[in-house]
Length: 324
Image (cartoon, rainbow, N blue to C red; front, side, top):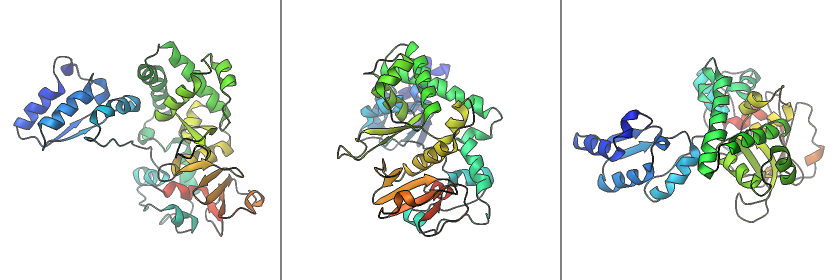
């Protein structure tokens, strides 16, 4: 939809001609580049009942905004980045089934034909989350995605001026250098120059746009409505790209766990450890991580980095990347 052709033609015109010539499946890319796209798709849906339309867009915030016009007509799918499992398939042709959380905790998650998973896992943490990581200029391209999101997509969505984009970039840099940390709105406002009252809104936009993760506690009673306990970057690849020096390994571990497990599970902050998922409590650490912190916690697990296999309530970190 970013072609000049659509400066003088409509999606409805294309759909009408396509349908009359026997078309059955119409695929539209970069839908967010076209003004009022959701209204025209609604018209197409109502007018051509046996035409199947699939549309994609790279600005998730614009897709969210337009989806209101398509309620009850079109399901919207959010394309999560590659899991460790998907990375193994796409980059190394290693086929691994999806394992449930219970499978992982009961040590049934395996990598067929792989005796040393850490060599693949460490590569994934650095540049395996995005499908275009094979590109020679991957770091530069990812930085361009970040810039586009913060300086264009979010300001347009929030209907604010461009200068906010630069402040958002500064806010993301603060998060990148400090994660994970408990957000202090006054401190963030002082550092970035953004109004304290606006900080929660912008953090929400950044989360919806795939830039950060907000870990909430279990208050509020409604899923996802608890108080924000920690801020993380969305995934470890962003940590490597945005950090001026090597990211702290402990931060990488927690970010990976939260990023991978949030897809199929409701992850919350733990009052005694790092994370909870339902009845389970998880403490994340390296090879030498002890069990003292969850010694008296029912259904407590130690998730260790730098180990190939688990035992009892000790589970290797990489296994949690096989959940989707």
